[in-house]
Length: 428
Image (cartoon, rainbow, N blue to C red; front, side):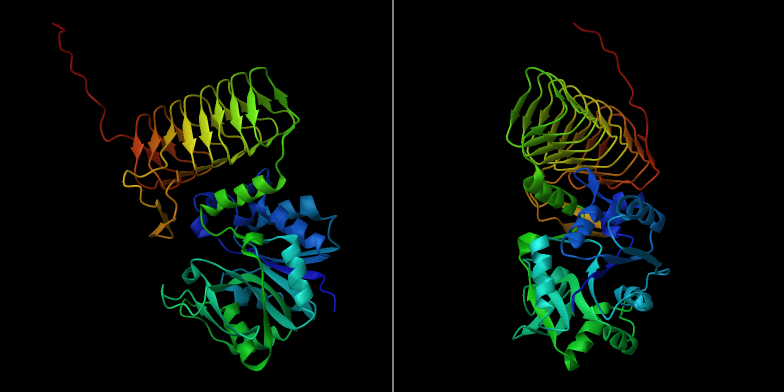
């Protein structure tokens, strides 16, 4: 039976992606010049999916508006079902029972799978009625780890303690399922965290039915789960789609080395040095005398002013970094305005991996170099410095001259405790 329907779970809040999910749902986080969900939907179309059912929740109106505006004419059917209270992935699937066909593709809304890998999954579904996709990872304890025997699923261990994991093969968040899954969802209870877990139902199914495990290439699977994944995903697409194409205005005395896509209405001013791969979005203005280093993504209508250096960072739409600033290995949200001389530090003194607070716990990024994560509509005064791994919530203001060591909540005005005094002493 041909699979032509997909269910996409996009109801979650995406807390590990704050501060960016304060103002937008996770699927709308920017990758190059488009939201993440754009690439997911285009790949589903490419493998013959014509009907899509979205399970929505957090900031649902923004997802609905974007999908309707950009994909209404690209699918024969698009439906949106509100999960309401977020009670787990199993609950999210249960509420769309009356909307799905006898077999369907299910994908988590924070997962991207290359077209060739999706085709492989669908082809494998001709062998087994129900299948789960799997990928290898170096950190299996962060995921649901699969127990596999002879190509069949025998169980799933959710986030085991490091060193106790049964394998390094994890749940990739992509399934082909028959409507039998709803019988198993009715049989399971809630998990220790009080949710109905799809993986519990899949595990129960594997005890009485064959659930095939199809492995996909790790290089063809991406997850938008943690803040630094934004950098990785943009890097992936830079390497995938960017070649040296110039549609905007590039003044004399600009040096461009390597692939750089400079979009329509963009303006690169004299003295600027660009090392690709780099993406510069529509209407953006760069320079004069700026240095844009490899793996930088600059969104639409961004201003990078005189003598700035941007390295391996994502600068989202409508943001201004006017002059004399350094941004390294960072993600800067939309409508941000930096004062002159704003710096994002990206390297610890001890050279240890940078840690970031995710859902209240400090987590190692595994990265030696990692800068700051600045939410939408943030403003800084002159000479502000952010320490590695710092997050700044949306709509916050930072007073001039401050060094920010700790995360800043949204809608916060960070001010010095007291004004600096002055002492005048005579010379000689």
